[in-house]
Each structure stands twice: as structure tokens, then as C-alpha cells.
Image (cartoon, rainbow, N blue to C red; front, side, top):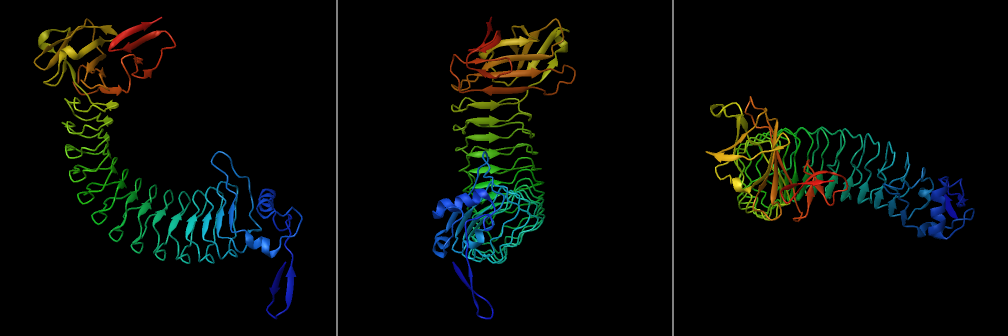
Length: 464
């Protein structure tokens, strides 16, 4: 029973019962009954109401909680933590829960959220709703704010100087001022419409996710503690990471970079710089690299002899004519580059050649197939020669890379005889032993279950 004092000093009594009148949602009502030990229909004493400091009625991505209303939560005046994620809430009023410190209400259908009276709030997660605005100017104690995947066109965090992680990804932000948020350690602002981002005051940043925006420049020279930098899918033409020596993961792909210097980033484990305009890439100092994507550039050479920790390398769609993988003993997956196939006109109409590197070893070639027909090639003056009575449209063979994990690299060449332009794609699916089978698409098959042609130990195997 509450005793409420009116403005003229009269004493009023209000009895809160665990009924539909005070708690309309049946699921929420059942939860309150469970945590208070009060049966439905009975009175909730002031002591019982104050005993509830934490509520967790969250559902999950696979099992929605099914709660459509949290009306009645206002009576829980001692509430400090509220978890109501993954429900069907369209509104939420916590204006009387002034002791609330943590609110997790993400993955609902909220269109508005008033937090102006929740000045004790330190954690607010309201992502994956339908919010068009969010005022956190009164929540100066916030240390964590996550409002991802809403419809916010602006966000003012100038009063939230204690923020450590800030996640505002997947909105419609065209600008974001974090100059007052000097305590930030993580900033996730990807999938917005940002054209600029000033990080000069955020010297404690360790994680920056700003990919898929419209950034034309990015200065991270003051962010020397950065470990993860994801700035891919922007409009960057230059990027200096020479002072970011702590970087372990660096994604700068799908920009307009003509050069990239990672010589100071010796801690790099993962580098994705594909789909740029790079003509040179020096990874000789990046000996800790395990994953390297540099495909879709204009590279004419690539030295990975010192990258002995590599487990995945993708370098296709460049202009590479040779690649030494012999030092990459841990390589599991390799997507390589192209060779040329042209008419050798001086040798007659039935003679064709493939340009190969100077160190190409014919003895390492097996299963040389032209238009599905087995052919025996020869090697002369840097060209792999073969005879065909018909115009070839495809060539495939296996090449022993002297790498235990990627012993047989499958090379597939689609030939355009007239143009002489690179059109091939090399792939490797590794981590298999000598008994591993591959189908003709290069996919690993543990045990063929249907008849057909397979590759095993570099040889064709017919399964009937």
C-alpha cells in the first residue's frame, strides 16, 4: 500500500494489485508473480514492489519474448536494471523509474523513447527499433550507448563525456561529433551517410568501425592505440596508418587507394585491401599476417616469402604473372591470379601457348586438360606449349606448390585466344590429406556419393 501526499497535504492510499488493470500483459504479469512470490489477483505491498531491482523478460533472436506491454513497470520504483530485448513493445515508459541504471530494450518496435528523467542511467541499448530521434542530453552518466539500426538522422552525444563504447551504426547520420567524447575506446558508426569524421580528440580508441559511409578522408594519426580499423567501402583516396603500430585487423578494401604503406604495422594479423587501385603492396614486414585479401587491384608482383603464418591468401584479379608460395607452409586457402593464353602464330594454327613464370617447373604439372581432353604440354622459353586440333576455350591443370597444405593448386584458364588478355582464376581448397577428393568445380568432397569424374592426388578418378 502506498501513501501518496497531494499538493494540499491530504493523504491518499493506493493499492497495487497484480491484476490486468495494473499489469495488462499476461506474460509480464506472470513474471512479476514469479519474482515477487505474489499470486495473480493479490496485493503487491510496498516492500514487495521495492524488492524488484532487476527485471529480465528478454526473448532471443530465435524465440521472441511475446510481451507487448510493460505497463506496470512504473510501480517498481527501486528498479535498477531492465532487460526487455526481443519482444513486441511499441512503447516504453520508464519516466518514474528514476533509479534505473541499465536499460536493454533493443529488438522491439519502439518509435520513441523518453530518457529525460533517467539521469542515473549508465547503459542504454536501444538498437533495432524504429526510433527517429534520441535525446540523451540528460543522461550524462552514460558509459555505454548502443542505438544501432534505427532511423536516426542526428545524434548529439556532446554531454555524454563518459562514453566508452558508442554504437550508432545502421542509421541515417550525415554527421557525428565525438570531439567531447575523449574517453571513447570503441566507435561503431558504420552503415551511415557520414562524409567526415574527426577523431583527433579520441586518443584512447582501440576499435573503429566506420565502414560503408561516404568518407573521402580519414585521419587516424592521433589514434595510436587502434587495434581494429574497419574503414572499407568509403571513398578514401589516401590513408596513413604509419602511427597505428598496434593494428592487428585492418580492412580498407573497396575504396580508391592508389598506395598503401603497412610497413610499420608489424602486428597485423588480418589485412583486407582488395578492390582498390594498388600497384604495389609490400607485406615483407607483416610477418604475423594470417589472412591477406589483396585481390582486384593492379599488382604486378607480390612477395609473400616472409609471410610464413599465412593461412588464407586471395590475390586474384591483378596482373600477377608469378607467385612463390613455397614458404607459406600454413596456407589453407588460396585464390590466385591469371595467366595469358594466346595463339602461337609462328608455330602453326594448331599450336597454342600459355605464358608462365620463368621458374615454372613442368614436372610439377599434372592432369593437363584442354576442353575436357587430356593433353601433354611442353615448356619452351617461358611458354607452356600444347597442340589442339580445335580452338581451345578452357585449360585446367594441377600444379604442385611444394606446400604441404596446398600440395596441388588447381589452375583453371578460360581462354580468349584473340585478345591474349588475362581471364583465368586459380583456386585452392586445402586442409586435406592425400585421400581428399575434389569435384571438377574445385570443391572438396569427403567421399564421393555419386558417379562422375573427381580429382585425387592430382589425378583424375572416375567413380562409377
